[in-house]
Length: 183
Image (tube, rainbow, N blue to C red; front, side, top):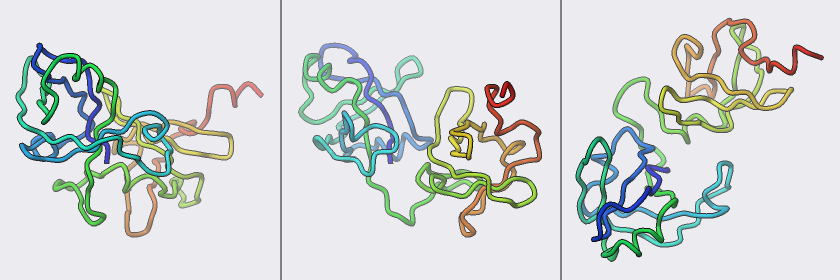
């Protein structure tokens, strides 16, 4: 599970800023946690699996001006830290592990689910969860191509992992691309 993206170095002793991709930074970046560095083709959305370039062990973390700063073992200077910039940090998570709060899901739990319209007809599949500052989006493959659906309860009122689907609200045009209307 991707838990962060390495940002720019902070200071001269190897600390790195982390762009979080997890709601559990205290758990995923705990002292002693091992994270896998992934870059290149293996880090692209839709990659079959992540290929770890190297393992990084968390030495310490702290918050600075709203950003998480992490020091990793063996990353002792700014040049070494800069060489890691842009890499994704992946945490190995047990298959049955799930977030503690109801209504929260890991991306891997949602990707691959059938997408049903309000009447229960399958209209596509979730291919990716896109994380943006304002809200998350579900990338849905439909007959006309890929569409982005805001992952909010008003538009996605039902997520049933056991049944393997998400249900969309009855909102006209939700899966229609503007180009589709012009044809």
